[in-house]
Image (cartoon, rainbow, N blue to C red):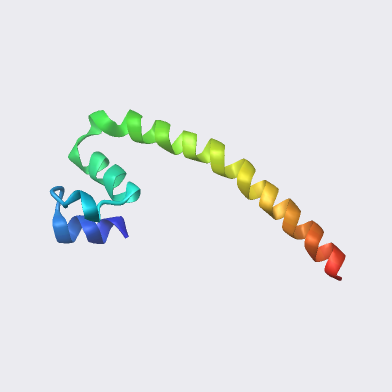
Length: 68
């Protein structure tokens, strides 16, 4: 949970404790000049994960149909 990490460590957490979510949450807290970077990463992540999710859904539906 990024917000809890930020509350506990602030923006100066050790790199060992940082997660991707914490890093991007920290970027949005620091200032609005980082919004474009965070938004671009969100679009890139969506472009990768939406097809993967749809593919897994299709495979699981086919497996379920064969089991029934």
